[in-house]
Image (cartoon, rainbow, N blue to C red; front, side):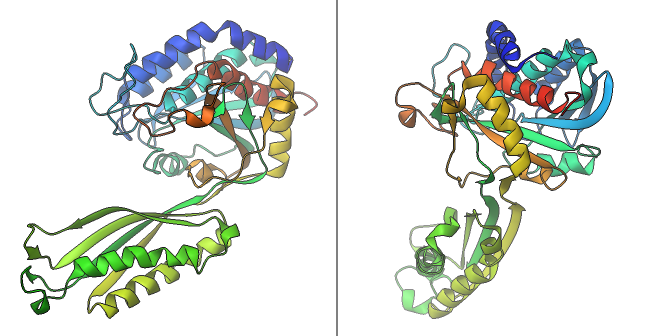
Length: 395
């Protein structure tokens, strides 16, 4: 079996090919559950390596297996594939050719990294004691792809699962790794406030849901500032407000949507009742009726202690422990959490920012997002190194 250092050296030699592939993915982004071209290209690369490939899994998902020469456990490695409805503003030669769609979260990086790992591992197939399952998932951005793939058995027989996400606030050449909670849970909040509409010049003849909604928005923040311990890492944000048809008409109702994030699974369970009470009672004070639809989407991403220890050894062999950063838990969310219901695993932050002042780099979901492509070789080596480490004869 190759050493971790040898894998890294091989990845660095392939870096020009990785960059070319990533730029191709970047140029032709596709939205969630629309990744037809992307999945075909991914499958083409995998078949060229001689792997058995399944397509159309849970939408446009692609699954491939590298079956080692000896029996052993099955290790799953996962990447997402979808892009975002964002108009790109990078000015790059390989900028998106799809109007209003952009790989602004770096899923082009993730696909390239996992395909790179497959390429690195393919030549050592007979040395592996077990199987590597490569999962290319659609629709991560709408938190639907992982569930869809699991319904089609993508995690059957998997012993451990590993994933990563690029992070532009972390310099390329570093990796972020921690045990326990890495990212928070994600839930959707839908609120409807019903009043009685009428003429804007005679508000006393109406029951104004607009005024009530403004109070609800401010009141929801007390669920965080006055009812939630600061250590729980909870967030409530309202993202949309829809109401009315004209400037001089008080509408009958207002509709709001928002997101709720929690780092503490136990505290998450208390949020539906808490938010429903606040909305209902504030609306009553304004003579309106408030209803809440609280939709649980994905749980927190929680790294397994033993799997994190395995990855730590690989990271230290690749780049040294001084480049292994322990990140604070973040209220980003990831449906990678769904796979962790079926098997223990670990999720890693791949530094993709500039060496100087990465905190100033355009962040995830920015129209100017532009990762440092030197992260590609390291990401591919990390995935391959994890597989080699876990599928050794003595592992």
